[in-house]
Image (cartoon, rainbow, N blue to C red; front, side, top):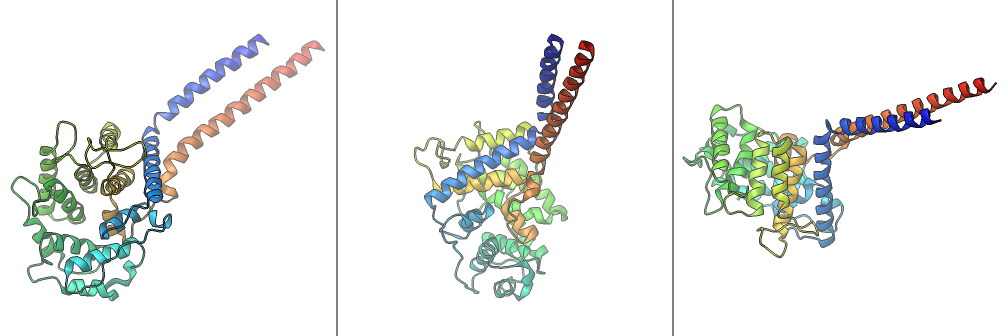
Length: 341
C-alpha cells in the first residue's frame, strides 16, 4: 500500500510538471485569450452604457466586434451625397461594416458607381482624407479604379521626416491611418519605401512612457493599428508590452480614458481601445479586413483553435494518466489477491 501511495504521489507530481510544461508552448494563445477577455469586458461596458454612435468610424468600430447585435444603439450611416467623395466613401464603409452593402454588388452599387466618377484626372478624390477613405471604400468593393494614381496622391502628403501631416491633427494618427490603406499596395516599391519611413517616424515620436506624440489613447491606438496592418511583428514580450501600455488607460469598469491622468472615461477612447485590441488579437485591423475581404470578418471558431488545441492536449493526457493509474492499481490488486490465495 505504501509503495502504491508513493507511486500515485510521484505520478501526480510528474503529471503536474507535464501540464505546466505543456502550457508554456501555448502561452501566446493564452495571451490572445486574455486579450479576448478584455475585449469582452469592454464590449459589456459599451453595451451597458449604450455609448452613442456619432459618425461612420464609430459604426465601423462598433461592428468590428459585433456590438450592434447586443445593443439597441443604431449605426450611423451618412446620408447619400454623390457630390462629396468623403461622404460617399464613408457611407460605403459604414454600410459594408454593418452588412447593408455587399462586395458582390461591385459597381452595381450606386454609391460605388458615384465614387468612381468623383475621382479626378490626377487620381485624387479631393484632399488627403477624401482620397484616403475613397481608396479604402473602393478597395473594400474590389472594383477597378485609378488606384496607382490615387496612391501617388496619398504619397504626395508624405513629409521628409516620414510622417503624414494634415491640418493640425496629430501626425501619428494621420500616419497610422495612411499606413493601413497603403498596406494594400505593398507591391509598389514606392509604397514599401514610404512605409519603412513611416515606421521610423513612429519610433521617433515615441515617448519615454511608451506612448506617442500627444500621449493620448486615440493616438496610441492609431499607431498600434498602423504598425499591425503593415506587418510589424508583435509577438512575445513586444506584444505584451504594447498591449499592457494601452491597458494603462483602462479603468476598473473596463472603460478607457483619453489621457492617463484623466479621472473620467472617454467614449471615443474606449471605442478606439476596443478596436486596437481587436487588431492585436487578430493581427490586423477592421479597416484592413474590410479592404481585403469586404467585411469586418468577426471572430469565428478558427480563431480559438490554438486555445482549444492546448487544452485538448491536456485533457487527453489527463485521461491517459488516469487510465494508466486505474490499470496499474487494478493489476496490483489482482496480484495481492493471488498472493493471499
